Image (cartoon, rainbow, N blue to C red; front, side, top):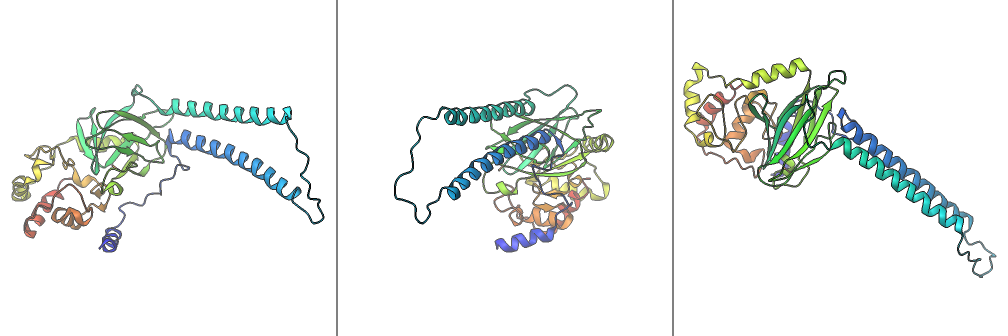
Length: 333
Ligand code: CUA
């Protein structure tokens, strides 16, 4: 059962090829700072390991027991001031150095207020998906965050206010920024200023229930012009096509509308993802499947198929109604 689920997911295909997230392959401030900090700490620790390990190894070889040694204990040396000063001062200097670079990196990472000229977005963690509000532009989307490139000569950083609707989640897109917990009744912050366009994948990084592993994130970093075009499209209400009037009416007659919002229609629910421009997203169910007609049919018929334990119920609709509802959903571009 689990294997068949996995195989079906593979068949559903990864929508866009994206590089594996890696903190040593940063594409943004402050991920750059985190990567160089991590390299520095690893470098210092590796040097320490080599020195201590090397000396230990040398002593083991050089002073090992040899045939013909007498059985007496070697001379015991006490109170060598030079050695004691050396092994006290050197670690103090190292710890002090590490504390300073740590403090410096934390200062760069933590900003409690949005820098002037940044794009502010509110990200809300839900079991098990992400909601993104763009208050400046007055729209809401889900799971796929679009942000602009931040050219160092013309910076446009993104500043996130992180909130949770239910339990503790954690927002983590390794190539763009550090991991930040998303905690109920509290607003945490995170910023990023990406310098390379592309799609960056991330993952909820705090165990939050059954579908924690299915709480994926995609961040689309695009040029200023592309970003502005995307914003224009998202701001508009949903398209209503006369040819799909009966499909839309069917959708609006279901309980779907008490959880989902489609701006410009009767669907005004807030519990689930905003579907106004559903088809502008590459994936379904917070990244668990490609967003296309056949997967949507599967998803509406039985969300558990892709995402066992998902809080969206199977609506038990007859198959022909599911198809008609999906006909309407795929028109939401
Ligand atoms: Cu949300 Cu783990």
